[in-house]
Image 1 (cartoon, rainbow, N blue to C red):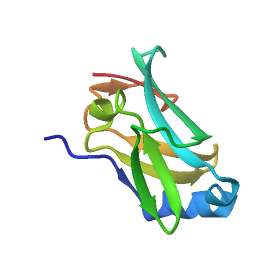
Image 2 (cartoon, rainbow, N blue to C red):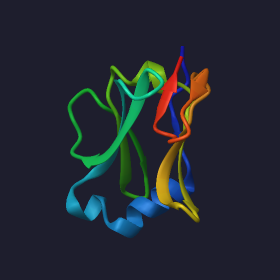
Image 3 (cartoon, rainbow, N blue to C red):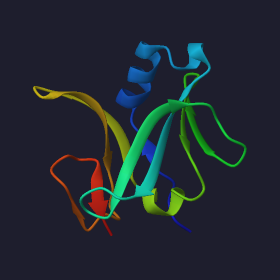
Length: 107
């Protein structure tokens, strides 16, 4: 069985800062076809769907749909702050290569 994705404390802390749960929202992480490397991540605030995997800590939630789950097996969802800006990031052991933008990858 594939390992589920892991969400860092930093990512959950950022969700708490922006008040996602207070707005009835959660962070959705999905994988779609496209991007410059074949697949791309979609990261947005969204409401939970019936079949979503829900990762929860301190009332904040991260959602992964069943189609995206195999692509994100063992991945780490984090939040980083750098000179170029702050963003949610995904360290994905399934990606064989990724684009410089950080949102596109291939398997």
